[in-house]
Image (cartoon, rainbow, N blue to C red; front, side, top):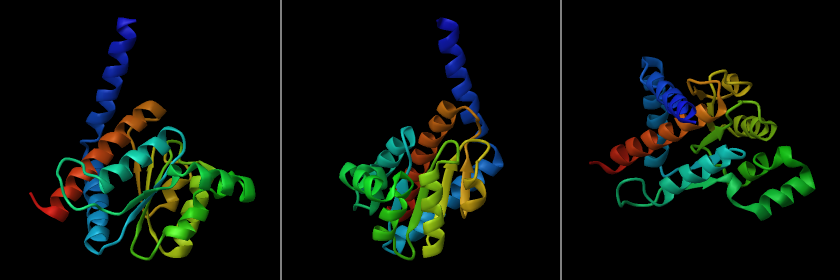
Length: 191
């Protein structure tokens, strides 16, 4: 048991160490700048994902709306997995593949940023939402695993976490979200 625990912690640390590579740092800077630009222009972020990635979407939106590390003005952010009534109505009436794209049609405006989280990069409802965002002219950011799946070529920017293992990729996504939140708070509201 002890060896398993040590291996899992070590694997997580190793994946996060790879986030220090120049291409990862450059991505984090670029995506943060894009989100800062949106917020400075009074726009919003719209975030989606399934399962653990749905929880990450909820977490990310909450950090924007409430606060990350400092008390400041609320920033507009919507997590598309947050309303079970909407999700089940869309799933029932249009099919589960439409649960995010239909909401995107309702909420997205030019200048907003759409963040799609899928560790495989292949979730059909996330792919459909990306297609809708593109048609609407919404800037898209993806968060996937090391392979990137279909999303890699569909997003304006796609962060491929440095691991093929879902749990390690999700751990990197949470760190990425926290870093972006810290940068947004600093750049939008100052130190």
